Length: 384
Image (tube, rainbow, N blue to C red; front, top):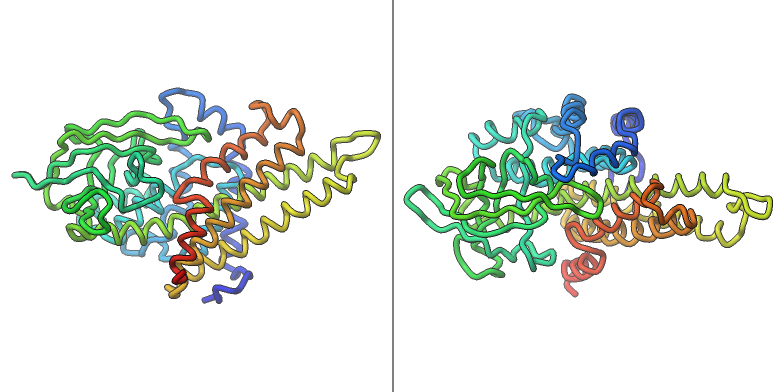
């Protein structure tokens, strides 16, 4: 297994990276993002493309073979998410595979893995993790949704916001409090809730980058005790582990998006002329482009190190996750801003594709914690 400090891909990883990039280039043109975001009640992504990704084996990369997966790691996951990020693919790889899927893999019982995880890996089912509540501000332990004991098992009452891939999902994994106060670190239980459960309401949300998201209302939803993932009250630890892994996958997507924005900007600097010469020949723009390049390479190093450290369960893995997310959040915003500005007036129009990368940067910067949150977390994990 490669060292977490190595930047070299293995032969198999290089093949996966080339395959993912070739598929994304051929099948996922950026123009389709506009078409998918237009319908007010649309899914926001393509089920057909999602099925193709499953057939390629991407949806099974991080799962055990017994669950239909390939038994690989985050080092391979980020190669796929980087390729998807380059074309801003809205398919729910991070929310359904790396959040809900990982929760099922880590804490699901045999029946849950058979009925939910295997269909998810096969591309036949979308499961969403209803992670956030209003006012949580990146705090996974801020849970006000309640799961109270009932004759059937548990009665769940509460509301979740910005549930990624939640609109028209087949099922939800809901963190609910079975004991304690809203911000207590313990007392959180994960519950599997089918989308057709009585009392469950799902409303489409429209995010700045057009991705699928929803508000999920639980009005006395009844579930059996067998719907619990893992142990009662032990859901907080599962969320910590799952969100860390999903954060690395998201960083791969951010890396791909900022790399594509940079490449498009570099091409524009070479073709746009002023005063009879390409604007890329201007020294000031050269310096700015050079900084964009450096920021992307620093982000790439941080993402690769975090992925490999987590795969090897190294003690400083969680700190490297925060280092990667802080680095990617800052770099993605910087590169997107510079890309739009270097394109000039056309960069500010919705008709030009470069603006889509800025919207994606704004959305992903805040997902799973922004740069300030992760710098603080990095320091805390280091004992400061």
